[in-house]
Image (cartoon, rainbow, N blue to C red; front, side, top):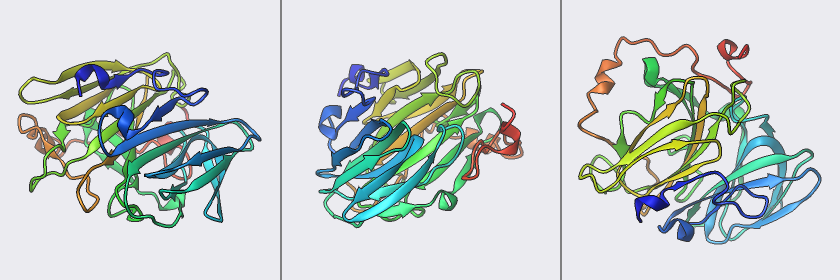
Length: 303
């Protein structure tokens, strides 16, 4: 995969009214995909999962999900910057029906898999919110679909990150492209949403920065990312993701690979791993956590 195929600006992966349709084949790799659907109020959508398992993750609004004779009501949220949402897992070889009382946007992070599991609902109140890093590298990690937290999946891993304006995340840079004692092989998708000046509403106004590179310099991508952009990481170190001052950054991470057991193990770039030690004794940014299952944290509600 050439570097020119890694960054997909908003709209370049659209499918009719849907913002993103990306299969593993479309990405030029083997395991990981992403769909982002727009649901019109009162109009049902039918999706066939095929060889992919998926999470049904509301980005804005909520939805009713019917699959395998079960019905799940996902209450969702106003935007990715306002609340931790509930979600559902759906298996491969399933027909899912989605409907919404008001317009909604729903992400389907996907992974090719072999085992067919039962559908399952994930309550928002059970989703752990982690504050990672310190100082200007403080960020929120919402671990809704990670190993050890959500084990009801065959290959699929997913989490959400919120980076307050002006902060750095995915730092120090790290990679997961070899099977070693340190890391496992995972293909990764970054799906970005950038808040506008109100701090909660995604907007094309703002931007952030993302870096992916290899130690030998064969890959060296430094891109400005905007609301709705997708970046693919087939290999190499990735990070930082930087939120421009005034514009909080969200991204959905989707990972899957060939390992028999789900894992998100990674190795830092040894040139920068010392930075973790420098965080000792450094206060975390009080703007984190930004959200919980209840809503925005008290320090963020006035913004």
